[in-house]
View 1 (cartoon, rainbow, N blue to C red):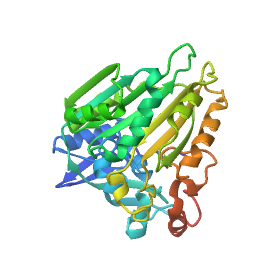
View 2 (cartoon, one colour):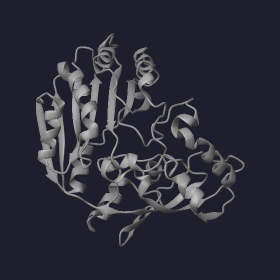
View 3 (spheres, rainbow, N blue to C red):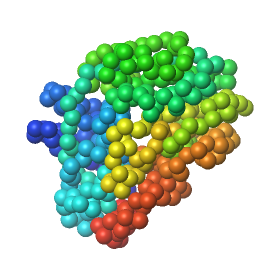
View 4 (tube, rainbow, N blue to C red):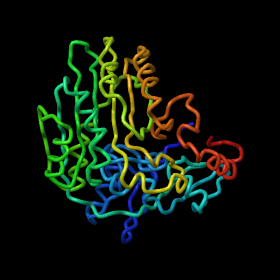
Length: 344
């Protein structure tokens, strides 16, 4: 069953608080808050729903400075399986901050933050520099300005004749901070595109177009406290390429405000990581990926925390991977509010 909450859309601002309907998309949230000079820490995809993003955590370019989207959640309204409408109290609000919901969330209230001016950037490096850039990126993260959010994507196209791509992108407070990042990565990029503008303009610039990928993506995600062997990971990515299989290593920076909240303060438990890695193999509908995805995941697992990002769901992965030490409390809350398991 799919419950469509898209008619429950809208944003009402009261001081530094924003009451947002569960069906509201991020683009609408940013537009409504921009006229007040405010925003919430969240992602770049304009069509992403605010409710689903929040219930699974919510990362974005302001996250290292302000935390997850769910960390800004201060109140919510939920309709339970028996039709009862409840305002989220202590336990339920704790769960909604990254742990899903035992009902249908209809309204969310967020603490907003000032919308900063930003320098967005997209840096493209030669394929031969992939291992060096990854190594420099991993080691630099703990020392970078928390207002800087540099993601790294290393991809192998589905056409084996095409070279891998290495892209570092994100946003920071100014061009000087981006220049410092480039020096830490140890290589000069082949192309260096930057855009100075408002927070809303930055989101649009980073989001690009909304072209739908018709392929089917298989993925694994995991958090890491320490670095992974860059050269061997890249070697595995580029070896034995298969026509029709697009491979991707997608690194998201962690640390900063993400990690300042104790692991048990919200349902979202991944509070001591250096970065998040999503490994993806995208193939045509009806096809299956080759051996690379599972083999690469097996290679990186000994270096990881054992925790996966809730907004990157994987069939068959146990709840403990998403919630670690918070799994037991989450189950007790879910049983209290949804004893029949309607929303399990």
